[in-house]
Image (cartoon, rainbow, N blue to C red):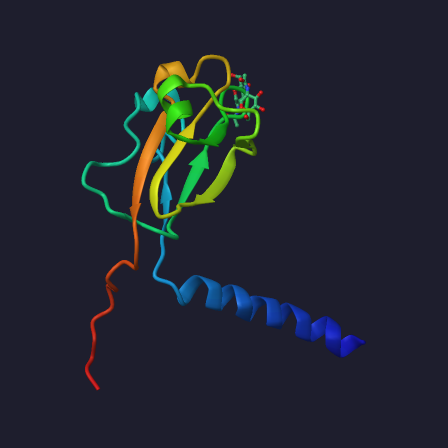
Length: 136
Ligand SMILES: *[C@@H]1O[C@H](CO)[C@@H](O)[C@H](O)[C@H]1NC(C)=O
Ligand SMILES: *[C@@H]1O[C@H](CO)[C@@H](O)[C@H](O)[C@H]1NC(C)=O
């Protein structure tokens, strides 16, 4: 019994470790130091950034004013999330990107109309590794 108590945390730790290193994915903070807030005026990332399928976006926000809802293009265009859309509201939410177009919006008290929406294109495949190949 004691063995199990000691072994389990190591087992979990190694699974997490593999999970973060086997794929070359990254997590990006939405809106930099200001976060997911209307003060960013709808500019969430520097232009020209390339996102890959499996990368994640971290939304940090004040739950009093904001949330994050995963939507489709019609909802994005009209600022109306369907009832079935998934809402994140912890104020510190990390959401993985799927391949292709990803649409997000905030639907609390008019925030979407204040440019609180975002479209991200994620390309297939993996980011070229930054590690220098040492040859074999
Ligand atoms: C969120 O906004 C409310 C109202 O302005 C404020 O009282 C609260 O401290 C804010 N929370 C955070 C985490 O900044
Ligand atoms: C925001 O979207 C969620 C998910 O569809 C929904 O449950 C909620 O009622 C919406 N809130 C408003 C204010 O429209």
